[in-house]
Image (cartoon, rainbow, N blue to C red; front, top):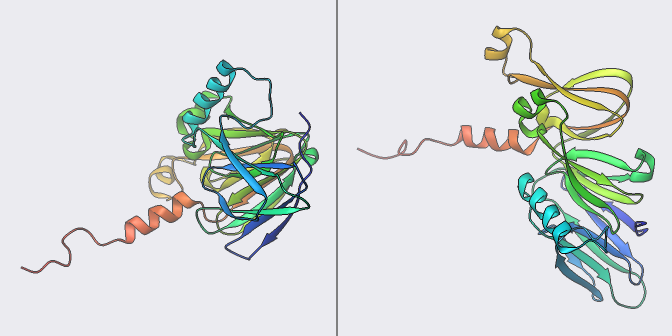
Length: 247
């Protein structure tokens, strides 16, 4: 199914949201709870699946739901359609501070791999599935990088990341990254996990036991502040229960 061609504009600096403009009968899909506002004339429906394969039967949809359940994402995707006259707008924002990155899947060869929590919205026709890492080591030790989402299609997708976003272009090089700092990468890039130095570095280096390695030719998007790292720091800074109690 060819993706709908949607126009968009991104607003904000560190707390960004994306506003999508739909022509009559155009549709954009989004994770449940991502909608910020929508103009009169936009209708929405929560459906099983992304709508990229309208002829998919019940068993196929059930299989897609099972895969999404593995990622910890909502079992349903919301479809927003312009049922009115003229152009209408709908906006989406993420649940934590960061940037919205628009990516044209045509420019990535039709596929993009991203962290399971990175997907925000996309043009109807985009297929959303999961991509298990190929090697056992990555599956056992990859942390956030174990389960990746695959976005497939020929239209615009919008992914979200925390902190500052950097786009790197690899030309056969290898890049070693904290697993949580990976946002997305082109499917031409190979992904693996390697040990983080010697035993002393692994235990006391503060970088975790393993690092992700990205190698090949293509683009990689990284985030400076993964939500998991922010959450860990917040929890660590909280006073212990009873620390302020009086004798």
